[in-house]
Image (cartoon, rainbow, N blue to C red):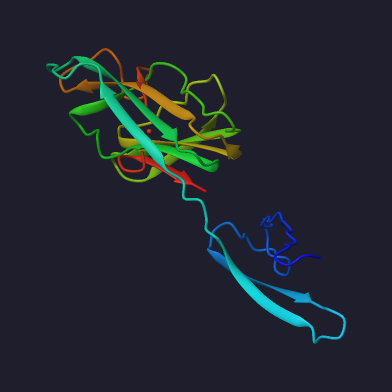
Length: 211
């Protein structure tokens, strides 16, 4: 070998999903590995030459993000009239296992929930969904619903609701939606438990994620 010749080796590194001993999830914490390598050169009649080098490899968990938007179709209504609202929540660049749209503490005795106008839109990768109503009189009630179906109406007046989609890997940049009607005071044609109109989902503003 001539002076200044080099030997180069490339290593492909991958982090296992679970701890090899206790099976715990390794994706939720930061991990650091210090790797050391050594080299040696020999020449006949001379003592061998050695050298060492090290490199630090850091693995950081990927932090999910979410973007939420809410739009009320009519910004001015009088008693007895209704307005539609659309809620959307969009996942960021990381696959997640659950996504929640929450519209809480919005309804009361005067502003009432009129029901969903269409089936909620599912984010790709979600395999199940559940709606939870927060009742005006206290407590909650929950039920599951399938793709293409509209969630069951609440049994009484509510203050808000949450829709949660779950799945092994809800894909990046996917959106969950909910569309509903709200009524303002007075008398309207629908009871609280009847079907009406509705939908909803960023990391600030009601959307939630779970890695």
